[in-house]
Amino acid sequence: MQFMEASAVWCPVDKARRNMSESGSEKMIEMQDVWKTYPNGTHALQGISVKIDRNEFVYVVGPSGAGKSTFMKLIYREETPTKGQISVGGFNIGKLKPRKIPYVRRNIGVVFQDFRLLPKMTAYENVAFAMEVIEAPKKVIKKRVNEVLDLVGLRSKAGREPSQLSGGEQQRIAIARAIVNNPSVIIADEPTGNLDPETSWGIMQLLDEINFRGTTIVMATHNRDIVNKMRKRVLAIENGAIVRDQLRGDYGYEF
Ligand SMILES: Nc1ncnc2c1ncn2[C@@H]1O[C@H](COP(=O)(O)OP(=O)(O)O)[C@@H](O)[C@H]1O
Ligand SMILES: [Mg+2]
Image (cartoon, rainbow, N blue to C red; front, side, top):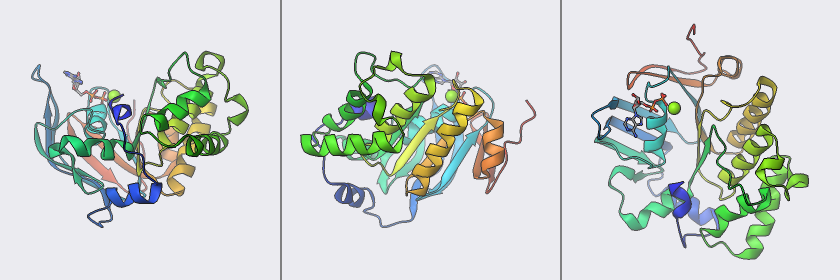
């Protein structure tokens, strides 16, 4: 995960958030006519323009291959746009100076369908590692890791390795890791894709709670029930373009 490579950017949460909001704007994410063509010639995104405000919760829906993951990768700067402008937290991330990249990455937590925990580390160590790479002080790490393990309800299983946890528990640890540095934004790419319906609901409620506490969340999903029950903003992407942007929206596809 690229954002984990950030080094030596630890600073108290308030200051980190100030770094992210230099523009003082309510917008958290803005894309203007963004195109992404992969080196093999695939046009994954074709003219995306969208604004997402601070504290919004947005579902990204659409068929496989529509461009959802590419849309999210541009936000956490795993990929850069071929054309167009992207700003996240007031940073123009298409043209970011290399020394500024860690500040942006530190402020974006990412959650994947396949959890991506480090297998030889305990749950505690997986979460702590995200703070160690930004060189947070040891005392701060211990307090904060225990805090987020409490929030995701897994402090009692802190000593287990991923293989000793259920899928839902592994995803909770991955979410704890994503939020431990207090990011302004969480990007979740099909976070319930490998989980049964009941476990998926638990993960959804956890993300909703994190959003309620002030973190902007963008979540790609194929989970119709969740989208239809939660009634949040829905962006539908097809063939690399936004075909629907609906407040309190629904899933909307028949398949
Ligand atoms: N690294 C890549 N190189 C080339 N083509 C890619 C790459 N990643 C994705 N694609 C292609 O871009 C399109 C959009 O993919 P993706 O963003 O993963 O869609 P989704 O997440 O909606 O399934 C697809 O046609 C996919 O095959
Ligand atoms: Mg995808």
